[in-house]
Image (cartoon, rainbow, N blue to C red; front, side, top):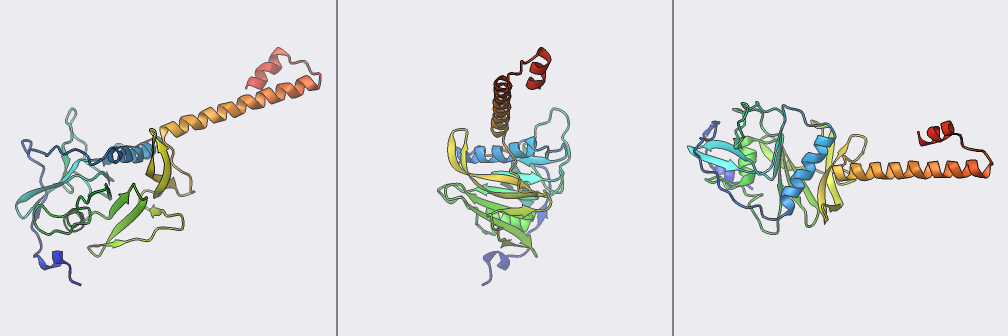
Length: 253
């Protein structure tokens, strides 16, 4: 079947910076989970030492282009740019224009709420559908759509200029070679919210932890070490061995 977008002539695209006086709409997020999902993805990468100065990772920041003379802005829930040009000191990024300000985003993610927000839209006319914009205009290699309520993860990869749905592995994850990481779904609690979360796993299958998980891991490690010290002291006592000051210090070490 011929897609509607294929019937339209090729658009004229201009990559230019958003004017300073351009009014960006201040629409609220659709639910509380969307910014938390984005923050969780970024935090795990940061604590894993995988964020470098030349990267750009953002959420709800407008990706811009001028299409057929019209300024178009789409603000994904989360996106990842491998290399972005640095801003001057004191300048705050209001938007991002691919090609002009750095690479095309490698990954764009949308988190689906209960209502359809056009994540699958291929509308080829202004203001343009999200999928059409990412696929035809920006040509983002990976477009990821996630349903937190059900845990459904859909990965679309750009192939010959069109998005194709990619299969997940046996664990329901998708490996991204450019990152050396797999993306998958994890059901659990974060910030007292029980839901499906998007998580990263390294190539050895290890989960990239959040800060709270690292703290809990260290607490359990310290508790186990303390229990071992208590057990050794009890064994020494049962054997009738008097613990000297030096021995006590060694046990604590």
